[in-house]
Length: 103
Image (cartoon, rainbow, N blue to C red; front, side):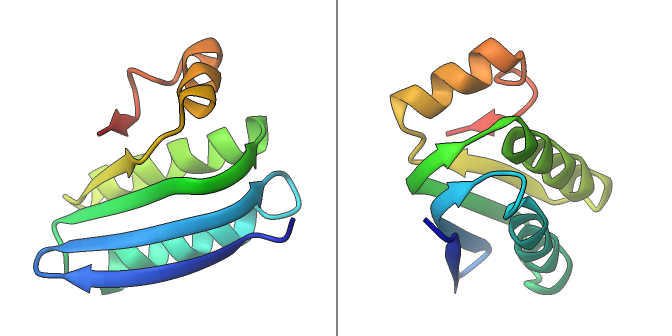
């Protein structure tokens, strides 16, 4: 499934809802959407809504880690929300659950 996104700014929170499969063929698009939200939204918090994420591979995880680091360098909090149990388990197995802000 091709990945899509929707970005909504409410107050000081920018939410980027990711729908579809985040794999090596889609990770650069997802990373660009997240960088844009961090760099141009003017928000202190960027939420990555993973409720409609159907698949997430190691490249997708790496992209989220890079986006998290990019946000931190700019003083923006990037957190993953609506994380499905299987995605949380993937984060735990990959050893990034403590690095990512999961809410």
